[in-house]
Amino acid sequence: MSSVDSNDKWAALRAAQVPPADSEGDFSSPDPESYTGKRDIPQPQPLERHGPARVIAMANQKGGVGKTTTTINLGAALAEYGRKVLLVDFDPQGALSVGFGTNPHTLDLTVYNLLMQEDVDIDDVMMKTNVAGLRLMPANIDLSAAEIQLVNEVAREQTLARVLRPVIPDFDFVLVDCQPSLGLLTVNALTAAHSVLVPLECEFFSLRGVALLLDTIDKVRERLNYDLELEGILATMYDSRTTHSRQVLQRVVEAFGEKVFSTVITRTVRFPETTVAGEPITTWAPASSGARAYRQLARELIASTDK
Ligand SMILES: Nc1ncnc2c1ncn2[C@@H]1O[C@H](COP(=O)(O)OP(=O)(O)OP(=O)(O)O)[C@@H](O)[C@H]1O
Ligand SMILES: [Mg+2]
Image (cartoon, rainbow, N blue to C red; front, side, top):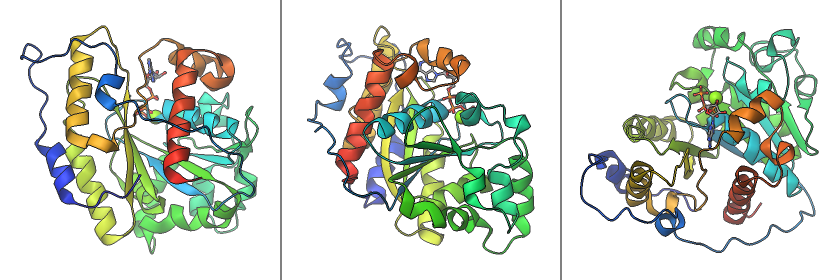
């Protein structure tokens, strides 16, 4: 997708308000494609050579919107298509690491060590996963200290970008799973990234905090990372049975237009189950609708980024 070129588009979103649930409107179609438009998504071609990586920050300061679930499953689906992918856990809760069956408390080396200690080798921090071509940089609660310790560092916002630099040539995609805040860690992720993917749940108040997120993205773009783009808005937790879900999706599409991915992630209990299983839905339930949705998202991303 092309870069977001104007504040106008985002101004539209800032102004967007979800109407009350009882407002008039044609929300009869249960099919999300009627809102997002069915776009042809080509099958990805095999890559002849890998890298340099497109770094994508998965960000939304609202909690529980599907950032980690999307990081895991989009990452796994991209790897299924032969892409080399690094997933960076950038949340002290370590949910991304847990999602791959890792116990974050028992780890010797995490992204925290890489950020704070000069002598740590990134190869010693990256871990293999159950998916070929997919590697994980884990985190645990230690990372919460980095938020405070980084404040006194020179170029504190560029720390993640600096430590990732050596491996950018080795991967096709680096996905950074942000914590639900707009603090220094998230600013580091936005500074290291080429683009931001915003998971947005199809819930009543989901648009409320987005203006603040877009302001932060604007500021990072003005001051730290001139080329930062909006990769896209991903509607998550969609429930076709509720008028409410359809209404929110329609509002999101009105506000963001082309920037909304055609792929919509439906609400299903299969996702919480995969967390218990400690693996992506693409390997745990390969034929499930959730797995298929994340594969489609991967195809959209590959098609739009030429990767
Ligand atoms: N499409 C979905 N349908 C049903 N449950 C989902 C879906 N996506 C995610 N979940 C579940 O919702 C919860 C929150 O998801 P997730 O952890 O991905 O969100 P998050 O944005 O990373 O949260 P946090 O802000 O706390 O990091 C998890 O229990 C997850 O399994
Ligand atoms: Mg998370």
